[in-house]
Structures are given as structure tokens and as C-alpha cells.
Length: 190
Image (tube, rainbow, N blue to C red; front, top):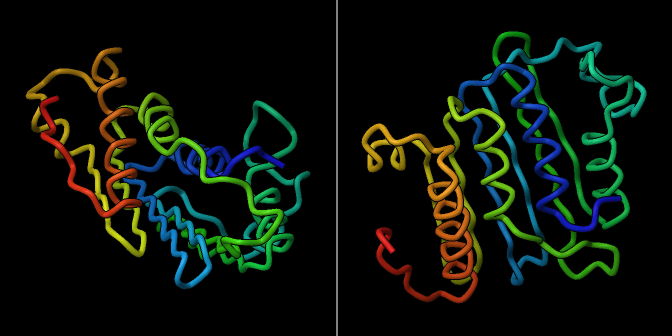
């Protein structure tokens, strides 16, 4: 298994990138009150037919040509089963895929959340032309990020500029922390 949930999710996001998605939405609910962490990745990529959808949790089934095994989805499914959660996937050819995995927050085998800023920075680096929406919600607050808004604010500067990527990573980290504590997010220009 992966060492944290952010790395697990990055594997799923990379599936969406390889499915020729133009928009990927990542939603995380991290609730102490409900004792759950719910992670959803939805995309508008190629999608899967029913036969592939039923087989995709097998690590020896992959559509990638660069390797013969696909571990992201089987690992995520295994994690949910191991941590008292639920796993679901919906997909249709030409319409995209929605994967939702929920784990018990206090289960002894539930990994830590990990670095969501780093996860998003790596996702953006994979294909800067994809529009990413990221939403992180806790019992104390919520943080949302959209690459379209960032591009508009940057007025033509590439998201792949090293200083911009690092700023985005840190901004998302700060927003996640604000949602966890219920504090205020400081000015975006910092």
C-alpha cells in the first residue's frame, strides 16, 4: 500500500490524465464528526465500457501501453476494504469516470492524509492543459482551488513555471490547513 492518501489519490488522478481528460475534479471530505475520509476523482476522459469497469480492480488489467499492470485502482479498492470503507466506480465510454473511496478516519490501517499541495502540484505538472478543480472540506472549513482561476490571475504565465508550481503547492497547503483549523486564508498574492 501507499504511505498516504494523497499518493493513493495521485495514482487515480494519473489514470484520469492518461484517459485524455480535459477536466478533473478532486473532492475530499475529511470529517472527524462522521469518522470518515471520502475521496472522489471525476473526469471527462475516455471512460470505460461495462466489461472493463468490472475488471479494472484486477491489478493485471490496464489500458496503459507503458506497463502491463495497473495498481492505482486495485490499491484504492483494497485500502477501502481494509479500512472499513466503501469503494465505487461509475463510467461510460466517451463520458468519463467517477471513482469514490471512503475510509474510516480512525481505523488503525487508514494512512495519514499526506501532502495535498504536493499531490496537486504533481497533477498539474502531468498536463498543464487539464482544468483541475480541487475541493477539501472538514468539519471546520472548506477550501476550493480551480486552475482556471489561477490561469486567469497569471495572465498568460505558464502554470509550469517552477516558481508558480511552488506557489500553487504552498497556496493549496495553506488552504487545506485553513480548512482543518477553521482559520483564515491569507492573501493569494503572498
